[in-house]
Amino acid sequence: FLKASVGFGGSCFQKDILNLVYLSEQLHLPEVAAYWKSVVTMNEYQKQRFTHRIVRTLFNTVTNKRIALLGFAFKKDTGDTRESAAITLCSYLIQERANVAVYDPKVSAKQIKMDLTEPGVGTNEAEVDKHIQICKSAYEACEGAAAIVICTEWDEFKMHQLDYQKIFDSMQKPAFIFDGRLILDAAKLRDIGFRVETIGKSI
Image (cartoon, rainbow, N blue to C red; front, side):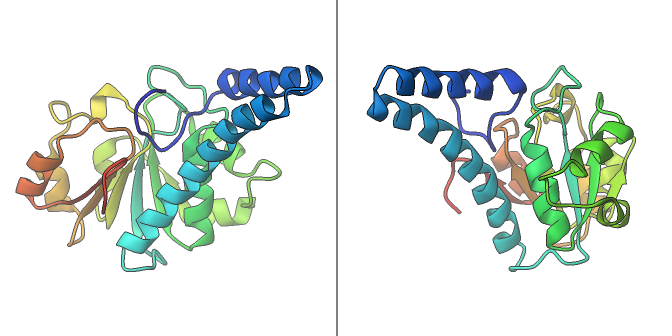
């Protein structure tokens, strides 16, 4: 939680922060309550900011473009998707008419579709069926994609685990990659030919 990312998720962390907000208000500490509330506000802002950056970088439109979204769980080594940043990203990209290819090693297709059609998310079942493809590997998700978005810091997405030259060769050109978890070597990816956008770094 102490390094730049697309945003934290999970049920406990946000719940604990909101409990601090409540306690501060009950103790008549409005400034302290406002401080903790701003943590949640900034986390949501970071998710939106990252999605807007994706669209802006892809020449201000993602309509009918294939976007490979790697990772759907809120963190690695779990299948828990509660409050995952990937839900926000997928919902926004669907609204922008992108075709999103999702791969996560532990999250089921059923769970992904359930999360994206929850009340309040902003997408319905018909939109999800039309714009979301659930893939069985990172290579499948990236094939023919205009961009890759790293949403979860799974070890299998790191440089020594995936063949990024193979992935680059299979993508549309120019090939973009958005590292939302700071797990990739941007310099090596640029040597391959990728256009790299890293969270926490200027465009």
